[in-house]
Length: 322
Image (cartoon, rainbow, N blue to C red; front, side, top):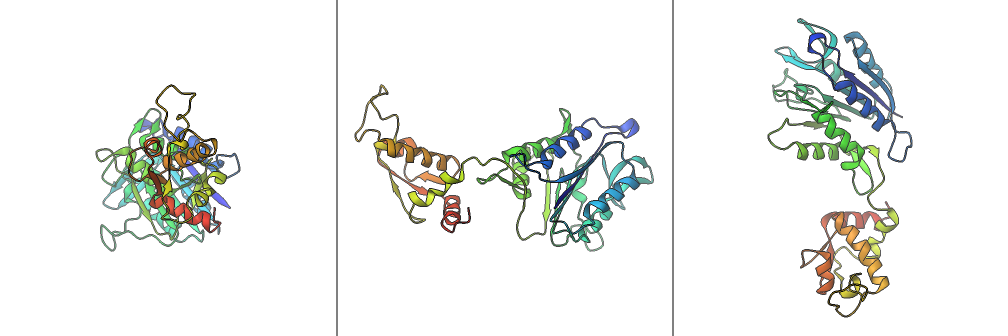
């Protein structure tokens, strides 16, 4: 079972926000179903006005069971002071801003869920997981916990175009931009996508984890079908094989096209193989050895070889793991 609590708070009186409910609704839509419309997370969502006592109880309920995955997403104001960090709730006061990040951390750390995930799009959210009792730089998270936040603890999380900047990228990542070749989207690939997209001068996302392997948060249609991908072992009998190309692999090397032809002319069987090899190249699995493009590798009689990633998927296919 996979459970997700999704919270977006806009209502803060004179300090209200505009995009947090939008953030929450879109994250709920994406997490509820995989790309093929199969059910993914069982979701509970709260938006607009959310009070402290309600939020604490919802977080406890999210992590209370022995689930495969429990995920908590929050979009709203964040605050830090000398006492710690907070998820600000609609009933905040000067001496009580909302739910303590340490309390959220304790709930997740003590949960029996196999995978506990916390995603925060709020100012100063990078404070999550810090343990001041040991050291200002110490992070205490138990096995199975992963934290992804919009910014480091000294930064604010920005809104733009009706969504938080961080969540806009999270939405893109969950929509498929962070998917691997099999269509799996993990928190590691999401962080890598957001980190690269933001750049060094924007708010910096924070990623903290204590897991032995990443689970897929959502699956989408893979960029290549498995039948084609498994052919990688047919074309490359071993990891170091150099697949020989010649002009017969290039489909435009045919009398149907007005340009200089080179023998041997395009062969249907070879052009079909070349089409697969070019797909592999586009996914970073194959590269021409001495040419910049596969076209020139074929026309000039070069070879193509597996990349490091290609060797990984070659091994998975060889061992019937994909």
